[in-house]
Length: 414
Image 1: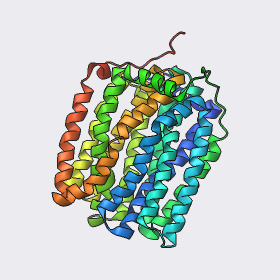
Image 2: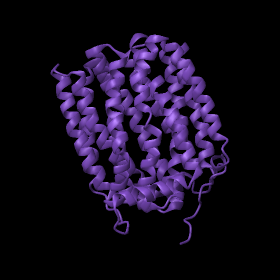
Image 3: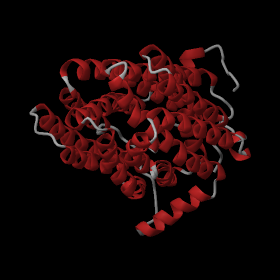
């Protein structure tokens, strides 16, 4: 990593915030992430209140993941064809309404596992349109040379929201129950939709073509870049491990050891780590964004180790901070690499292939980890997962096209 400063310092790094649309995008992302941080905590404990089963948690999480995967490629095509901010507006509105229904069911005591699974399936499908669309918004409104700073600022807003969301989630779920958390999540979706509706993006000129042709073009762009598909292949495995060991089993371990309220604190510490990572990346702006990013992914290993061997609130919270630091280093490096090296009119489609490959196996982990943990032990699942996670990350880091990919300091000439 190479640090780059200057006499202007932070003022120069934050100059991109003078752009109205950047401020609107960052504000919308802050609000939506705030709710999205509360939602998983509220949803998991709502399921545990109904069933007291890790398998039921995995079922509801998979009910969201599967439609998300199914619709990702369609979401990428639509996001490259239509104004991206309008795609986000519609999807966030749908998610806000469905989460309102979930909150009502939980608060009134009428929620069942199949109802929550069905609602999360709709939310997962809506999210399949949001994620590719959001990837293409910042590269649409800032120059490529300013993209690292804009991405870091956006990541900082996301991280700050995760701190607030984690703290609020702990208070709400620990003191009032998961239904209120779902209601807050619903409100944030609707507020984020209102903010994103005010964006004015320049049109992307594209020739008329069929969806199949669009998908082929997106695949060609995706497959022609080794650093893209190698990272995506790696994350197809890493996400299964992380989803099983942290997202699914983490709350189960917390529920039997250090408590639900403390799990909210863990989420807040994760957000604090993201903030620290964003500040670090804003100042350092590494010349090799994927080299820094994959190294950062190794920082998720301590929390899996803590959940397996040291399930104490302080240890897990500290490890969550370290994990957040690493995740943000990777997230900013990855978004910068995609935004600078992939053509804007194909970016959402490449992003949808990225997300499809990264998430496609998640439901397998979500649906099976509860049964595997029951057959062996939670501790064994965590330790085996940790070993595989470290090996896959190191193997990806040393691939030459990843190790040597450079940041672009100026927009390339036509």
